[in-house]
Length: 296
Image 1: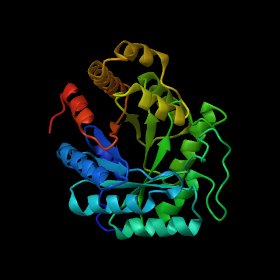
Image 2: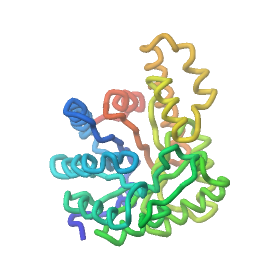
Image 3: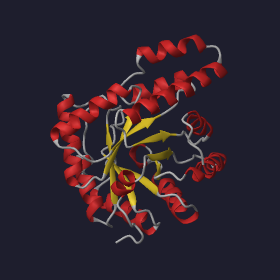
Image 4: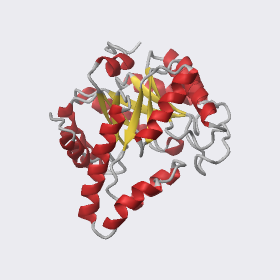
């Protein structure tokens, strides 16, 4: 039993006026770690519901992720959520990682199946001795250490799903396994998110679904990330940003404005909060908060 969990994460999200959360990735070197902690320090005063730390493909950043989430738990007022994937791990290894999180004082995990090395559309092959589905990892984490478990949701469906309806049923299976809330991939349209809410509710999903927001400050970078996730940047978004292709300052300003508009539309569509992909920097998120008139 992990001490100090208090209210469940679902309660934390649903009890507040609205939830805000931030995602970071494990730094590769000392300079990157300094940048990460600067972002954490600058965003901590906003009192987010939680912050999450990603987990490299195939467990490549496992030790760093555990260390960073543990430090957040010890040295800040923030509630950390550590990522964990089925890719490249046996069940025994997954149990050991969960134990490491617990020992570090981390009471919350984001349980992911993870993508194959060749991307989300590639055929999935489980690790020998490992798990095949995110729902299995949710069940394992829920039973081992009393973790609060989050899962992934997909505004346009997972690229490997046979249909949007099947994708919704997969989310339901994760809820039934013990998931308390879900975080979506990058959302570019409030209509896409509203469609996810409708499909999910139709099959019985009732956990909070937090839309993922990444302001577009570099169109090429975000396009590459979106394509890796299986869904390209919409043409309407590209059309709005293309006039600023050779104007970095103008593109940044327009990207922040678009993100703020999207946040407002998502909240109007019923989002219980917003999850920001920060790329380990705080300025863009703080600028969006300023546009939304959210202050410390």
